[in-house]
Each structure stands twice: as C-alpha cells, then as structure tokens.
Image (tube, rainbow, N blue to C red; front, side, top):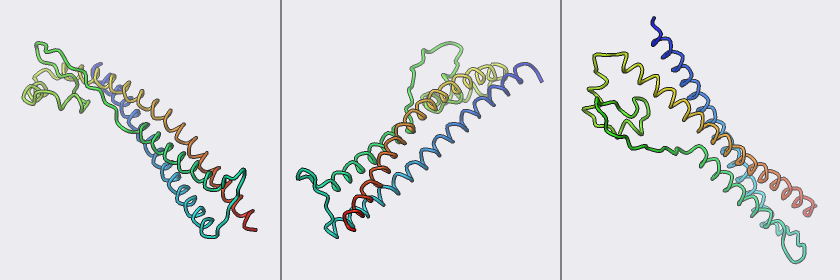
Length: 185
C-alpha cells in the first residue's frame, strides 16, 4: 500500500466519523422534537380540561392559566423552529472557474457535483491516472470533513437553544398543572 492509499484511508475515516456525528445530532434533534410534541399535547389536554371545568386563576383581572398556556405554545413553536433551522441543510455553491485540464469542483459534495457537466465528470472519473483522482478525493474529503464539522457545531448551538425552549415549555406545563389542580381542590 502506498502513501496515497494510506492518506486516503485516514481521511476517509475522518469523513465517516463526521457523518456519524452529524447523524447522531440529527437523531438527538428528533428525540427532542418528539418530547416537545408530547409536552405540547399534554399541555393542550390539561388546558382543555381546565377550560371545560371553568378553572381560573385571576390576578389583576388577568386569567393566568391561558397566559401560561400561551407561553407554552410560544416556546414550543420557537423550540421546534430553532431545532429544525439548526438541522436543516444550508448548502452554499461556489462557482468554479473553468480550468484546463478539467477538474471537478468536488467528487463527493452533491451540491457541487450536480452543477458539473455530466460528460466531463464521467471522463474525469474514468481517467487513466487513478492517483490524480485519489489526490482530489483526499482534498475533497478533507474539505467536506471540515464543512460537516462546522455544520455539527451549528447544529449543536441550535439544539442547545431548542432544548432551552423545551425546558421552558415543560416547566410552564408543570406550573399550569399545579395551579389548576390547586384551584380545583
């Protein structure tokens, strides 16, 4: 095995690791959104029960229970929006300057691949010199690993704040429930 093969193997493992991490973050976001939807459903059911039983907590002529329910809804929607914004794709496409001999912008990144001329793309990959393709693959995997790592960092930021919104919804649901039960008793 030559040095180019060893470098490709290492860089490919780095790239695969980044993919596994981003998949883990996406799964985490899915679990949080599922939890948020459960809390929102529970809050709506509890609020509906309070309305049906005419349970009110009026402070300074404001019914606090609908106000708390409004906070729950606002933070639930905000939390889901933040998380979805964080995990959603945000790809940028850099226009490439035509060069001779032809070299694709990327051989891994689909947003760039789909902009390539199909015939030139195929001809390049069927090239006689496999080392040129390996060198390009190594370069692209390094760039893609960095891009994915940046996306993971951004996902983590949005998931963090989405979870905070979830916690506010959860705490508000607990407060609304305790107040409603206290008033009912």
